[in-house]
Amino acid sequence: LRVAATVPADYGTLVTMHDEIFEAWSVYKADTGAIDAFTARRGAAWGRIFGDHVMLTWRPIPRARFGEIPLTLPSSVPIVMMGVGDDGVTFDGVLSQQVQGVVVASMAAGGVPPTASEKLVALAKIGLPIVLCSSATSGRTAEEYYYPKAYDALRAAGIAIEDWLSPRKARIRLMLSIGLQKTYLPFGKEFLL
Image: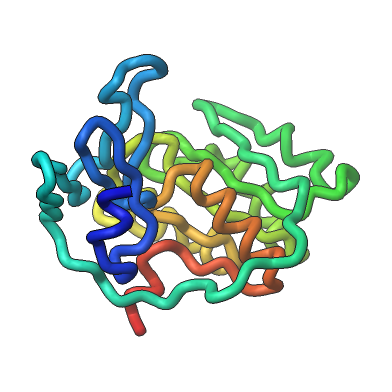
C-alpha cells in the first residue's frame, strides 16, 4: 500500500514483493516458492523500498491506454507453443473450435517452422487475430538483424509481432483488444503518441 500511496499513477501498474518494485509488463515469476520469486526482464527498470523510502530507477513514459474495460472477454484465445520442426497441426482445427484469437509462443527470436508459418499466415488472412511472441523471458521476438525479411510474410498477413510481452501477457492484451473490438497493438507501439 505504501507504493500505491506514494507513486504517481503515471507509472501504471506495478508489482511489488520483497521490497522490490517492477513494472507489470516486465515482471515474471522466476521461482515457484522463493520469497524473492519475481524478477524483471533483462534491462527492464525496477525499484526498491528502503524503510519508508520508495526508490524508482525510471521515469514514467506517457502512453495511450485502453481507457475502458470490455463488457465481455473472449473465452477461447489459446497460447500455442512452437517447437523445432513443428508442423503446426495444432492450427488445423482452430476454426472449427471457434477460437477467437491465437498467441503463438515461438522458438527463441520469433522462429516459426515453415509448415506452421504457412498455416498461421492462412489463418491470419481470413481474419483470425494472431500475435507472435518469444517463449524466452527476455529479448525481442523479431530480431531482424539476424534474420532479415524472416517476418515479412507474417506481418503482411496481419500477424502482430509482440517484442516485449510474454505469451501470457500478450494473451491478456489480445483478449482486451478483441473484447473492445480493436486491432491488437504491440506493447511499446503506444509510446509513439
